[in-house]
Image 1: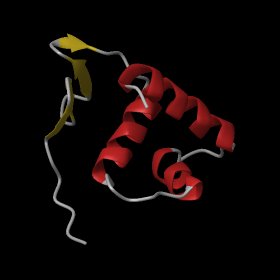
Image 2 (image 1 turned 135 degrees about the vertical axis):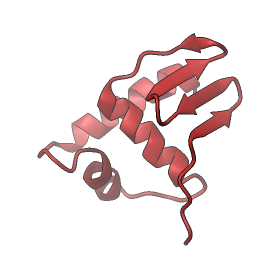
Image 3 (image 1 turned 30 degrees about the vertical axis):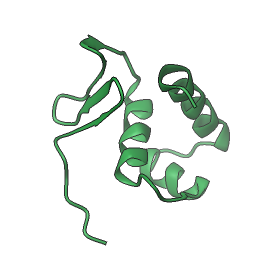
Length: 84
């Protein structure tokens, strides 16, 4: 699959700017922790695909050892912000 790097993603009222590491709802910045931001990027880059937990953990937390709870928490944060 050819993955071209985008500079931003837009969906609904949201905009994620990769180079500035900013996430907006409307024109307002929504604060995200670095890991939650990275998780959102991975999900957007793989939209339409089913991703396994291990893949997400490896992509977002590649430099540390974490439990699945970290992923669950990060997804919970994203759901609260953008909805299900």
